[in-house]
Length: 92
Image (cartoon, rainbow, N blue to C red; front, side):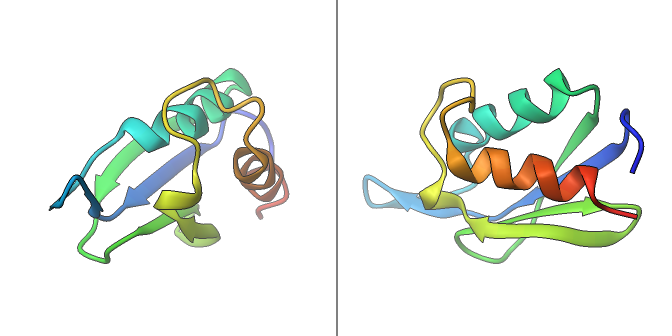
């Protein structure tokens, strides 16, 4: 997949401090890594708990548990962000 792809980042709610809701704080690193590589990222809320999906050209190229992503930060040290980036680059 060429650089500058449009990536749809779908994320579900997760529990923090006893409250379940959609939060983007764990997505900041992933979004930062993808935008630094030239991709445009669109966030989209989904109903599935604890789930993150990356879609490129309508195809799901990466999924993970949102709670496994690092909280805040730039994503450079987060192994899941690195894996997601490689999956986006290898998408058709």
